[in-house]
Length: 237
Image 1 (cartoon, rainbow, N blue to C red):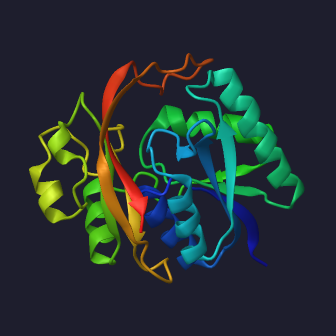
Image 2: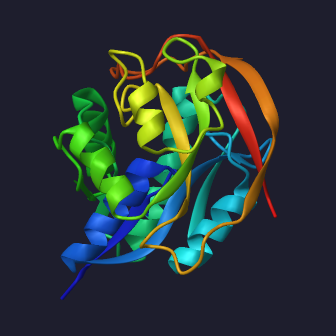
C-alpha cells in the first residue's frame, strides 16, 4: 500500500525534480501540493510568483494546491504556528509523510524534521546529498523548462533574472554560485516538463527590486541576513 504524503511545493526546479523522483518510486500517494503564500499580495513567499500561476501548475500536475496564507514578512513564530496548523490538518487527513526538495542544507533539513516530528510526520528528501551539477543536468535532460524569477543580489546581478534555466544560464553563473541555487542565489518557476499535462503559458511583466529583513529564528540559523532581491514578474496568458 502506498504511503499517504503531501509535497512541499515552491513551484521551482528543485520541487519539480523532487516531485518527479518521488512519483517515479511508486511508494507515495501524494495528496496535495503545500505552498506558502503571502496573503497580502497573493504571491509565493520569496519566489514572488502569482498564486494563479501556482494553481495552473497544480492543475496541470493533477494535484490540489493547499496554501499556508502568511502575513507580509511574518515573524518565525507566526510562520511556525500557521505552518503547524496546516500540517496538523494534513496529518488528520491521513498524511504521514512530507516530501521536500532540499539538497544539502543540513540545518534546514534538521529544522524541518524537528518541526514535523511534533505532528508525527516523517520528512522525505528525494534529492538529498545529490551533486547539484548532476541534478541540473537531469533537470534539463528530462525535459523540464523553467524561468528564473528571483535573484539574490549578494550572488547575482539583475541580468540573470528573467532568463531561462538552461545550459547557457548555468555556464554564465559566477564561480561559487551553486548551479541549483541551493544557497538562495536564485529561484525559478517551472512551466513545463514530464510531471505536467500541459505547459503553463505566461508573459514577463517587468522587474521589481525589494529588500527583506530575515525573520528571527528560534534555534535555527538557516535564515539569510537582509539582502536585496530582483524579481521578474510573470503573468498568466
